[in-house]
Image (cartoon, rainbow, N blue to C red; front, side, top):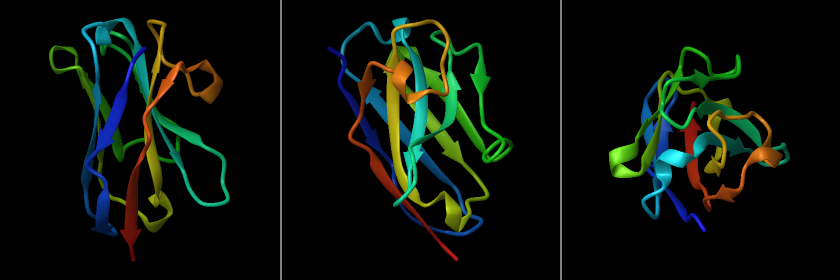
Length: 124
């Protein structure tokens, strides 16, 4: 079993920046591709970034491309989501997820483990 814990959420003004962290338990973190997802009230959970098991490949949807950056530090068992130029529509609960595969996926159904989420609120 893999335990994931997100941190770094909070309140930020539009145009500001925030960095989220996801800490994974155990010493097999490098065996998993990782994804960041978000879910706003009344909306489906959507992917905002993925990173392969070794950090060599990343992918982003158009809604956040150029503003969000996903990265990982396998030595620290941690994945990060750097969010810049934040907009009110970015307000959501943000989740990290782990997948037992070398590459990430945009689908929530392809992930095996999930954190409990961290709230991000962007004010206008």
